[in-house]
Amino acid sequence: MYKILTHNKISVKGLDKFSRDRYEVASEIGHPDAIMLRSHQLVAESIADSVAAIGRAGAGVNNIPVESCTERGVVVFNAPGANANAVKELVIAGLLLSGRDILGGINYIKQQAGGLSEAELHKLVEGGKKQFGGAELAGKTLGVVGLGAIGSLVAETGLMLGMQVLGLDPALSVEAAWRLSRDVERVENMQTLLAKSDYVTLHLPVIEATRNLINKELAQSFKPGSVLLNFSREKLVDTAAIVETLNTGRLRSYISDFPMPELVGRDDVVQMPHLGASTTEAEENCAIMIADQLIDFLEHGNIRNSVNFPNISLERSGVCRLAITNHNVPKMLGQILSVLADRNQNVDDMINKSRGEIAYTLIDIERKPQDDLVQALEAIDGVVSARILPNHNI
Image (cartoon, rainbow, N blue to C red; front, side, top):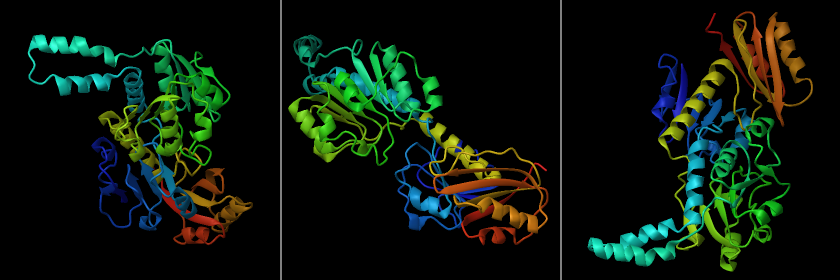
C-alpha cells in the first residue's frame, strides 16, 4: 500500500487516479511515500525520510526545497503545460485591459449611475465615455519572452488578434520550436525585443539568470509608452525599476498577477491576486498529470516531467525492477551490477541516465531478490537510495 500525503485542496479528478486498493491518500498520514501539493510552502525539515517523490500540481516549484530533495534522492515533479490555456486567457485579458480603460469605465458607471433614470444614465454615458477610450491591439507589436507551453499559446493568440509577434527564448526546445508559428519573428536579445514592442509579456521560470531580469538598466530599453505584462513569476521583475519606469512614462502600464505593496493604488498598474491557474479545468489537468506521474514512478520507477532528475522510462520485463539513485560519478554502474552478479541475478533489461550531479538507473531482474539486496546496494559509496518494484503484471 502506497501512502500519499496531500497539502492544499487537490482536484478530486486527480485524487481519483489513485486506486483505493493500492493507495492511501490523506492530508495527515504517517510515513508517506510521496507528497502532492499546490502552493503549500514545503520546508526540508518537514519532508519525512520515507518520501521518494513530491508532485507539484502546477508548473512552478519555488515552494519546494528542490536542492535538498535532490541531495536526498527525492524526485520532484511538476505539471508543465497543464495550466497553459488558463494562463494564456488571463494574459489576453491583461492585454485588453491595458489597451483600453475598461476598468475605469466599469468603475465610472458603478460610482456615478446609482439612482439615475434611463435618460439621465444615457446622458452620463455619452458625456463620460470619451475619457475611457483606448487603442486596438490589432496592428500593434507583442513581444513574448519565453516560448514554452504558455508563451507559444500567447504568441499564437497574438497573431490571431492581428498583432505582429516577436519572440525570444534562448533555451527554446525542439518540441517547442515545432509548435511555434512561422509568423512569430525571432529576435536575438532583450534590448531589441523591448525597443520594438508595444506590449511585452514574460513567460520564464525564475532561475539565477532570469531573477530581476527586468531591472533598471534593461528597463531603459522599453519602447516609450509600452506595456509590460507579468503572469509568470514575481521575481522576474525588479519592482523599483517598474516604479521608476512608470514614473518617467517610458512604461505606460504594468499588468501583473503578483501584487506588490509599492504598486497598490496606482492608476497605471493592474494587479491580480495570482489568478493565472485558478480555473476548474487547470486545477483538474494539473492534478491528473501529477497523479499519473507519481503512480508511474512509485509502481514502475519511470520519471516524466521532473525538475531535478532525468526523464527516464523503461518498459517492464522480469519479475522485479530495481530503481537506484546515485551520485553521478565514475564506476557506479559497475559496482551496482557487481552486487547483482554476486547474487546470481541476471539482468533482463536496464537503462541509466544522469542529470547534473545525480544519476538514476532502472534494472529489470529475472527473479525475486534476496531480502538484503537494498541494503547491499545502499551500502555502495555514492548510492543515495534503492527501491524494489515488483512486476504486478506477472
